[in-house]
Structure formats: C-alpha cells, structure tokens
Image 1 (cartoon, rainbow over the protein chains, first blue to last red):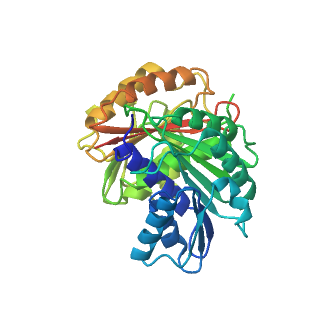
Image 2: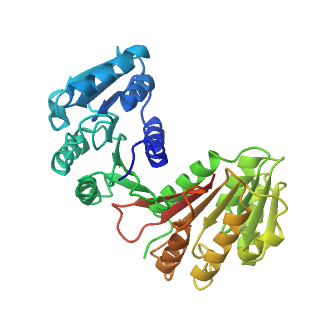
Amino acid sequence: MYRDTGEGFRNAVNISHKAVEQVAGKGDIVVDATCGRGKDTLFLAQLVGRNGKVYAFDIQESAIESTRLLLAKNGAAEQVVLIKDDHINMAEYLKERPKACMFNLGYLPGGNHCIKTEACTTLEALKIVVDVLAIGGIITVVFYPGHPGGTEELETARNYLSGLPQQAFEVTEIRFINQVNNPPQIIIVRKK
Amino acid sequence: MYRDTGEGFRNAVNISHKAVEQVAGKGDIVVDATCGRGKDTLFLAQLVGRNGKVYAFDIQESAIESTRLLLAKNGAAEQVVLIKDDHINMAEYLKERPKACMFNLGYLPGGNHCIKTEACTTLEALKIVVDVLAIGGIITVVFYPGHPGGTEELETARNYLSGLPQQAFEVTEIRFINQVNNPPQIIIVRKK
C-alpha cells in the first residue's frame, strides 16, 4: 500500500501544480474537482487571485470544512466557490469554461477510506471536463494505483484519455519508474 | 515510423529543456551527450553562459560541424568544448561533475540513418553519467521508439534506470499517450 505522505505524492502534487501554473494565472476560472484537505484549492486560489474564481468540489462535508478553514487562514476564501456535491455534477455549477481542472483521486487523507473516488464516476467527470475545458486549458489527474480500486481507476481513465484525438488534445503520462509500492501517477490533458 | 519533425519531438525537447533549467544555470558544468545538429548544445551554452562550460559529444564530424556553426552564429561557442568521440568515453574528458547531461538518441537528422545510437553503448554511457553526475544534477534522455532499434534502446535503458535505488535517484518517465506512430518518450533521472 502506498502512503500518501511519501515522496511520490509530493512529486505528483508538485508536477501537477507546475503544469497548471504554465496555463492559468491571475483572473482565470479554474476547478478543483477533489478538494480533499484543500491543498490544491489553496494553490489554485492563490494562483488566480481575487479577480479569478475557483470552483471546488467534494462530496464530504469534512473535506469542504477543512478546505474552508485552510482558505480562511490564508486569506484566500473570497475567490473560491466551495460546492458539496459530486464532481460529476460540475457542469450545473460552472458558468464559464475553466482554464484548468485538477483531480487528486483516492480517499480523503485522515478520512474514511471506504469513501473514495471510483473508476466509473471519475471517468464520467473526466468526460465532462474534457468537454467544458477552455481551449488551451489543462486537466491534471493524480492517481493512486496503490490504493484499493486505484489501479482500476487509473486503467479506466487512461483508456479513455489515451483515445482522445491528438489533433485536439495532448495527453501526457508521468510515472516515477524507480519507486516501489505503486507510487502515484499523473496524467495531464491539454486542449489545443 | 515516427517523424522527427512532429509534435512529440517538440514536446520531448521542450520538456527536457524545462527539466534542465530547473537544475542548471549560469556558471554550471553540463554535458550534451549527443550533439546532433546542435540544438541542445546551444540551449545548454546559453543556459550556463560564458562562465559555465558545456562538454558536447558526437561521433560524426558532420554533427560537430553543424553544432560549431550554430554556436558561432549565436555567439555561444566560447563556453562549449566540442568533442568528436563516442560519449562512452566522456569520463576521459570531464574534469568536473556535471549538473546536467542531455541525451537525444537516434540518428542525426538529415544524416545517414545507419549511424545511430545503439542500446548497448547508450546503456554504457548512461551508467557512466549516473556515476559522474553531481548531487542534485539531472540526466534527460529522449528516446525514439519509432526508429529502427529505438524500442530496444528504450527498453534496455528503461530496465537499467528503473532499477536505480530510490534513496539516491528519482527516475521519471514521460509519455505522450494519445499520439499514434510511436512518439518520442523521455526519461529524467535526478541524483539526490
């Protein structure tokens, strides 16, 4: 079992942040599809600033609350719309095409490990984001193949994303190939 | 067959440049293990500046000449040592531990396709660089699995690099998974 606190996790999160920074900035509309404890939401809120907007989703109240606290503590709550709903419903909330959408899959760190993202709904959410994403925008997805169901989730998503037409999308997979214990993996989708 | 001029090529080269920029800068010692037409050599020469040094290797006179011309045209020749020798001999030339070493494998664009890097010597060269690389330094390798022998070269190198101990090295593989015709692949090694 892969531990979330490991180096692969830090690498994966850093790489996804760097990828988003290349595309989105002050005043942009972005999405955190999986709030968790709010780390990506805070990163996005600081990236887009007061004139931007972050739509941040999680199905768990405890994740929404953790994120709310983290944002408040960092003076970054104003530009974030926190939404306690499944990210497969995100199209109902988004008024604009986002420049970036981040997924950090798996379960809530420190939460109930039975409540986690699932291959089926992750696939559905990805299809929605691929559709609504702004031209030039990116999707970052961090997978945890070491978690129960994580490999299935990765394979399902990978199968879909690797089939996106290369005229319209650039899909990049990043793996840490000398790490033991199923380290996280990243897939980055750029819409041309 | 993958064409060198395609998008995957540009992506692979851009990604390897960005990776090197994060580690090496003005005044550093770096290596281009495969001059080719000199694009990476010029990039490295501009990155390290007049107070740095680039050791640049190629077995073909025509590659060395192309690189010499490109450097001269860009006023970047002074900090480059051009060496017409196999990169497996690089330890004989290097006086310092390099901060970065770039490999762009395959054959010389516009040259004889029979003269190309080979799995066996590429592996040997990688072992040398892994050994001499400075702590904190990186190796970038761009592979062309669409070239004859390219898949074998990738598999041989991948097999070695994925076995490097994770306490001492971070090995990252980057693939463009929605491109047809065996696009280039990148492996990046960071020495901790």
